[in-house]
Length: 308
Picture 1 (cartoon, rainbow, N blue to C red):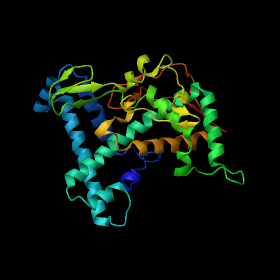
Picture 2 (cartoon, one colour):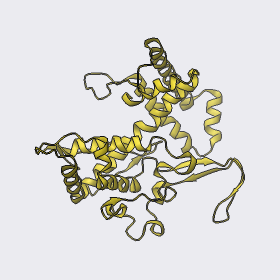
Picture 3 (cartoon, one colour):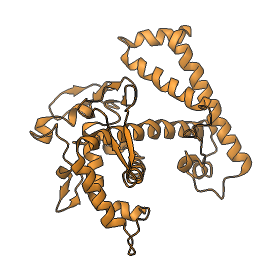
Picture 4 (cartoon, helix red, strand yellow):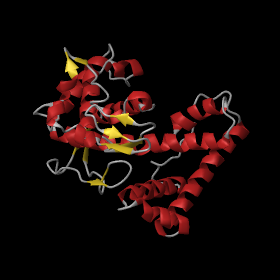
């Protein structure tokens, strides 16, 4: 929120109540995901037509989210935005369509809010199973960030870019546990896939990054193992073909927030492991995910936190 809109909602302040925006956003995300699990789209479309049940709730939640997003835009316009550097101010300087701006606000929140949290949850679960990876990240942190007088500093953007092992560890975690486990596209025109499958215009085509990241013929016989080293060559990170690793999608519709998401994850990981030891009470128990637009661990991930 701070980077995108110059706003700190204070969601981590224990003294503050959960904001109505956050509650409405969570509800809208959960109910939207339920549409995808319906046995037939006719079910939710009929409920929407009659304004019944979950579709009535979804309509109310979306209305509240839109109203609050519009309020944010109006406040920014009243206070002025020409001297601000957040993304919303940049967009407002070139676009005068409030509906478009509102959709940008909601899209940024939807794309970046739960996905980063989901990716970090899976990462720390894997880290608790692989202490050697945690040690390697700490060694890299010491080597790259430690100042000349021996004191540890906060990693700069350039320093984080030099931390190849950390980047590899995050990519490997996202391979096994992508925040978006499956996604769909609609064919713009008639097309033929490489295996000669005909795809008619308008057909919904679903792909499954979670399954693709665990395919032996794609990733080899050790595809189910967490091995950051598979992303490294001579100690440097080497990216994979995005069509093999579609965690951030591929082609013309690649995720615009990819780099920002990775930087956010690196900032959190470095801030935590430099000060704390994080342990999962039962690391051998594989996380169970709750159905939704984003792969959130059912019931959250309980951890033991110990100061170093």
